[in-house]
Amino acid sequence: YRDMSRLNDMLPRINTLPLGCGAIAGHAFGIDREFIKGELGFDSISLNSMDTVCDRDFVAEYLWWCSMMLTHLSQLAEDLIIMNLNKGVALSDAYSTGSSLMPQKRNPDALELLRGKAGRIIGHLCGFLATLKGLPRTYNKDLQEDKEPLFDAVSTAHDCLQIAAGVVATLSPLPEGLEKALVPEMLATDLAEYLVRKGVPFRETHHVSGAAVRMAEDRGIPLSSLSCADLKDLHPLFEDNVVDCWSFEKSVESGPR
Image 1: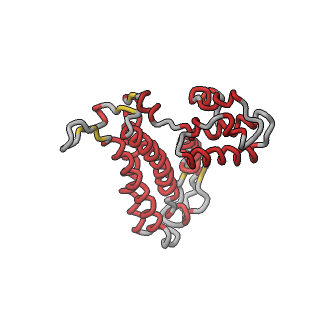
Image 2: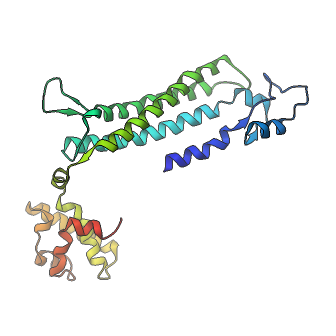
Image 3: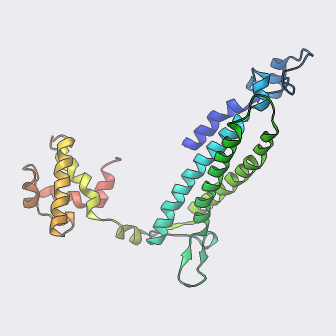
């Protein structure tokens, strides 16, 4: 959603009419730029011809948007790579390959390529900004360096979005593998919220829950193995129903955090 919102925000700034600026300082023929803007469907006209001739903000801004969008795809890819490694999801054969050495291994090639493409486009952005930073107003031949990064970014973004959509549409969650990744310590916040529901401020329950985690670690046991008596030593409002805190299902159903 954020990436789509940023792209939509960018469009009015890009859709600016440059016609009439000439090669440096406008023209002498009385062209009605406002009329041309309406006829051609532009949102606005550029205001300074010397600036317009060298303006490549639209390239830099698109490269930044593309870098941010691909960074998000890269983060998603990394999440899925880890989940695939831990047998939490199964990737489709269409987006993974076998290992050249280990027959049982399924390499998340598509996800690794998505992760790598983000670095490539970030490099385009940094390189192009370095080209722009020392240029004076009006046109300079250096500006020909805008084409390759822009065209490559458009093509790469198009391909990566299609690949990411395909990976997500064809993967299969593996409930047993996902459940194995759950540990009782994930429910420490639920333990704190148990006391909040009894009127104890969260700033206090946070410390109580942390003390419970330390107690379990010192004893070498899971957090959920602490008894009600153990927890009462940390705060008197713990009761027998505190065991309900150790349910992952109830934790999820209790609402968003």
